[in-house]
Image (cartoon, rainbow, N blue to C red; front, side, top):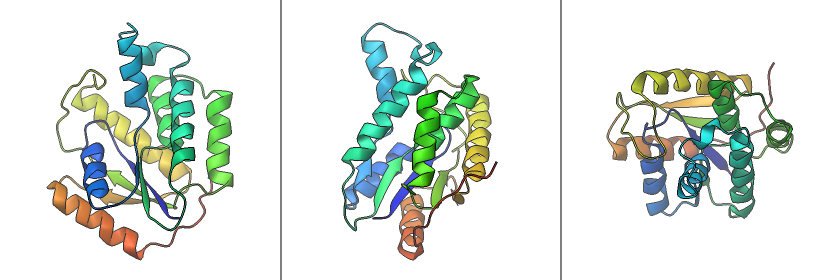
Length: 188
């Protein structure tokens, strides 16, 4: 079953693209960090990303969602992956936890995702939300960290440039119909 990752900076339009793909009948798997933040906010924690357990909470929820992803031949799209969580840890300046390291090892060893990943580029603005408190400059820095980490892990990145949503979705569908998933491998 081909599993493709949508990655990129906050506010780039990944979730809108995911919704479009879902509407077209593709199974999708939601991003975890936003929901971890939303729950923390509901529990009274205003900046959960500053807590030492934040990255592991994201990894745990990602793993649960991945385990529930449909099996079979359907192309499934993931809004982020544990590789994104590594980028998040680096961006936040926190060490890689044993849980994150283990999950990254599993992702590579078991070839969980297609080697091709979609890098949804910044649209040139960031709309703040309760979970997204990042400036455009910070989002662009985060974009660079994401790109570096995905390349380190051997992913072939397909640029999804800023464009109308329908054009972005058409690009993703065109590429996925021609791509054969293959194993990924970390390159130090």
